[in-house]
Length: 350
Image (cartoon, rainbow, N blue to C red):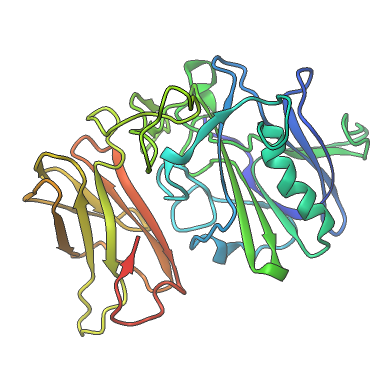
């Protein structure tokens, strides 16, 4: 069964408590106009390895942000479907999965553990009276007559599962679902800045079934830059493989706002590998998960400009583009906003 009460909390952070070995959650006290909430963020996994993978994007920009300004403060239930505000790490192209690295809950020294990585942004939001926090996950409470065990307000009430909620180990498979991932976004209007924090357990795979959200074995190829070295244990993966195909082909450009009428939209692919790739069975998907089959071959180190055809559409108000291989595994994905698409005739570079 997927999560029962998925949605997003919009409010002001006013207090926090670091995670510890006794309670492996980073806790935040959040308020809206009338209600207190506690959000509990996992900073250690119950399953080995215990270090939680994370990525922080200090300049997050994605078409889903357009939905968030419209939300009232407080809790909003979200439908688990594409093209809305619901998060899906795999299908939403929120970040490059190869940027995720595991960190321990707490170790000596500054800015080197998961408590530190989260705390610096929460502390900043607490000191900015205009900042807003958006916590995606599952709601609990309100619990009449029961005091919150961390911050002491009444009634107990909050949000948890603020992490990836699919592709789980068998012990937690009952929580699997698509378009129900957790996450933390912080908006700083004075700087016109969004900060995104996304978390994933190492026991979760990167690929999952499109219907159930259950795990599909397969990892992530490796970091987008230089390959890892033995002295850098937090860098994942290596070169793309059939089991971990991410990054083998990349979406490097798209024409989403053409000047020709009728419009002809295109997507440009780059083959990063030293071998030609047969595109039979591969697909391009748009924001609404409409799929267009690909064909032909793209040579080693070469690019291919694909002319899109119905039902795939790249809307000018923002969207995403996803590339799947013949096994249905995500190889690459990008997003663009309304502002990105505002210059007619110009191709976007990813």
